[in-house]
Image (cartoon, rainbow, N blue to C red; front, top):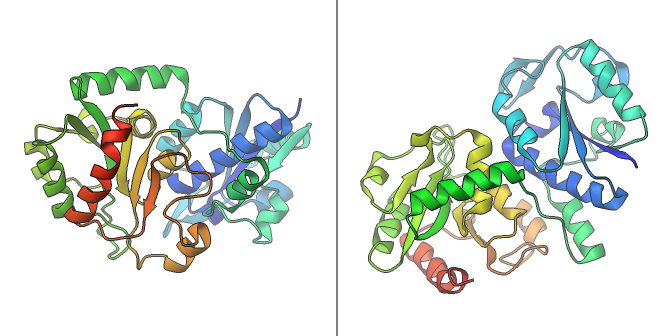
Length: 318
């Protein structure tokens, strides 16, 4: 049986949780294609070092220069939390790189191929490879955390929701940029507040984004930050909750490749051409299941309410 080695190139992926989740889904597909039980993830600052065996040196990731693969602790935790990942190999020095090269050379399928990466022929930020597989087979494997983490998450949501229907919410809020699908906090506050009077639901706000203190005044809200959840547990909440709502973001990819319903909002003027390539004129990905929608519209209270009410009575009874 072949091993699958996923190469997460920080220089070309940006080292974000969003690109990592896309890679992990692609590895699920490679496992299915090659009938492999598990996969390994190789983290390298720059894929060219896998070919040369040289020291990784310093790599510019997300606008900051880091030494090798430092500061990746939370993302390594995510990798190790996935149900089908056997190990994570961090290429922080020449010894680790030689070990990774040996792994890849030993009856192993590399995804993506290092030479393909270096030549700029692979995009970590696109679902095209996933869509191509779906077009050939009519289905995709679904991304999942381990059984142990899933059990913990179910218990956590049961405790927090108090018998109400649990909804995970991620409100992207990057103060360094504007107009890039940041959440309209006032709209979400009004929407969630109004839900108290009509629906037996409970919202769990996930992510490490700055959070308005006003959410803490709402009795139908839990803020996962306040419970000091690690990143893998935030993502597990997204997977396990009965519905995910939020902005198009890195963490939202956990819902994108999951089984449960979601309503993801994308500001229509942000990455408009890229989204057209991904979705065409549709409000869902080709591999989406029932009630899994990507809405290219502003997250006004009216739009949030309309999308929610069209879905909740159906998804909450399943």
